Length: 145
Length: 209
Image 1 (spheres, chains in turn green, blue):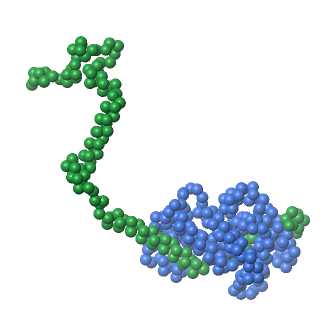
Image 2 (cartoon, rainbow over the protein chains, first blue to last red; image 1 turned 60 degrees about the vertical axis):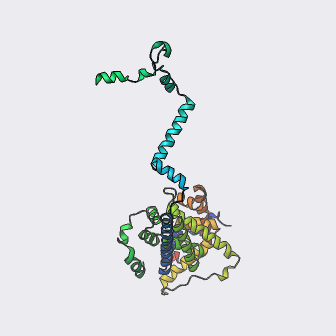
Image 3 (tube, rainbow over the protein chains, first blue to last red; image 1 turned 135 degrees about the horizontal axis):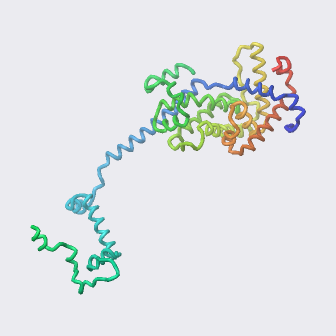
């Protein structure tokens, strides 16, 4: 390997090498029309394939009838008002379960009437505030007319 | 660009002139192609094929093989288009890397065959003296390039003929920028050494270029 031979580098100066590179750049091979056509055909084929696949996918999506349900389940869902209603029911059920299991303090105190927070704890039995204190009594409503 | 090709593809699908896409980046065109845009495919083909085939021809010295590599590289580009991750690499950098690897594979396979079987690039030009001299010079440069080790040749061609910057070459060859600098420097020294003996024959002392 003579790549560290600086004397020879001087014998073939940089600018002459540059001139050769420039000539080489001008001589760069150009693609033939046939090549351009083949490449473009590949690209178009790719688009065609993708479009066909997409069309077929959409067709299967639309064409397949909905998965048949058990008639009893379907009837129940329909009776309850469709899947939206069933979803609401399920949510309410889960929330009820969570409240029952977790017994959050707010719910417990409301239920026992100890809804007044503070130092002194009202005893339901002695304070006279029962669960009905949370609701306007029928008679008050009746008086107001 | 050859006219019949453009016309044939221009009529049925093209809604705007090709020039309208000149300002659009390679990457935007590639994404558009990934979404099924045929005009983008045409613009990319016209824009990228000359660079791809020119570089491949420089490495392989065989027109047919260079065209095969170019078609293969572009086919890979078409395939990757829908998953192209924007902003990660330039389209041209990616292509140069693919072409480099494809050419390296071919050159390695070819090595078993022996050099004599490789067709010389044919010369269909008028044999005027000036043209002949230039032809001779370019051939001499090509031969000197061929005598370089693979990586040096790739680096020198990318830097001095394809005109890429060192950071981009580093990405193409998947090496560090320092390694690129070292490769091009060593490559140029080796080229100078290989060409030194032919300096007079190549007419450098006569025309003072």
